[in-house]
Length: 250
Image (tube, rainbow, N blue to C red; front, side, top):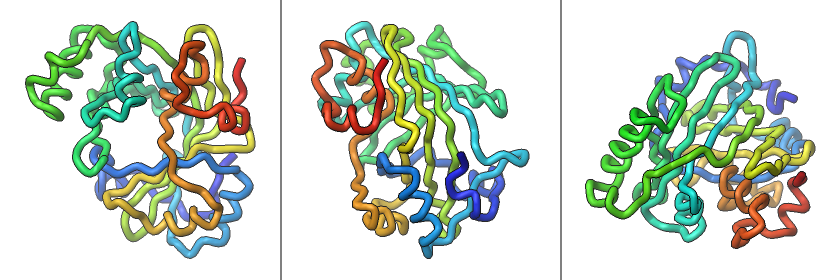
């Protein structure tokens, strides 16, 4: 499935030379695929679709790391101003690996630190996480957090990326999400996608179009939803109604 395939192609170098996405404002949505497809037919916003080696859909595999008592999950659930996620992402189509630390900075922006060609929370990974957190929050922050991390949740999904021609804001569209936590599996229903609007400003030109679908930004993290849906002791970061509507649990 390639949502927005009628848009002209744009190459990766053009996209990343304008803005590398390491500091940004995110807005996330769960949207019915048929409705989003029609919106892209009707929109007056000029868009292009990322194309690499003739492909426009790309397979991702992600491993999240957290403490035994899920400290990262708990920080995000509580809305802590200083919080972080640690993950390894594998880009299957290009066979690239990135070890990443995602932090929150002022104005609710996301700041991502990247260690290229690394996969695990070993000594090098731990040093990178510590260095990233000091850069984000200062030396004292390391005394406040537990860095005894372990693999926790795994997921795979297919992503396509649209780029707003005049601003280089990006829209990522994820389908086929399958995630695992403690032996259970959570799948996004086939008729829905997770859309993320990534922009330097608080609002993007696409916000108005998305409002036409009665779509509202939501606090949505694939990691948070996975742990929340599959953890028997979960404190309900996502409602049972939304779980039943958008996901299937096995």
